[in-house]
Length: 316
Image (tube, rainbow, N blue to C red; front, side, top):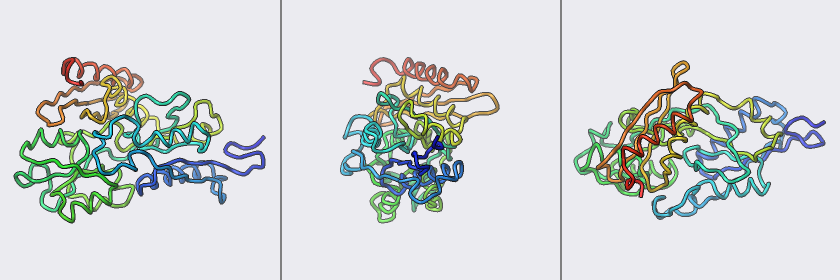
């Protein structure tokens, strides 16, 4: 019998689907490295192939994501390739993955989460509070924009899209005084020195599953599941499960500012979440605790409480 991850001739064949941005490729190579560490046979030349797939979110760069509409803007084409058998697994930033997956697919592995906090990139300030009066802040994220405006209504938010390097360059050339980026992405690219300040969870609550790399596979693919099993990080899986359960109840889309962040201390999981209007004029917050094994239940409960607090018309 062939070993897991090999064909009948004991030649390993594993095709990883990913977007083509520098960050996405860094995450794919990180996954490849972890697979090789767990299964040394996969170090053989050609054993693992990284397949770049362009998504709708990559193709449309002239509009904010909220204007493009729909879900799965950075995942659908990769999922189609997975369903078609063109790739064996897909590596995603979990914050981009809709709560409802296509039939036949599952998130079968979560790598250990990187730091989920946001950072400020600015030449003039070291916090949101110290940015100049009326300063222009570039961000295509409604979550970030709503939280910034809630603290500093005087700031002007303008769309700023592109990969990490592009957004940093736009601030450096003066398109905006500042922007916010995920610390996890900067660290994976070795660019954390570009951060003017790391923003606390209290200052800017992260996106659901920010900093987590999820690996999507075909349901029932025992060969790939066996290869990925040693890579799964259970605490990350519990934290992400709580945050995504909250998001699912809120039925969030790219048009709804939603944030959630779970932490584990011992056997206890703490989840905080928020739901806001895009202009930051109204921000609803809720938090709670539960045993780690009840992560999904806690997330759904926090989501329902936020929904009740906001009222039936808030998410329309």
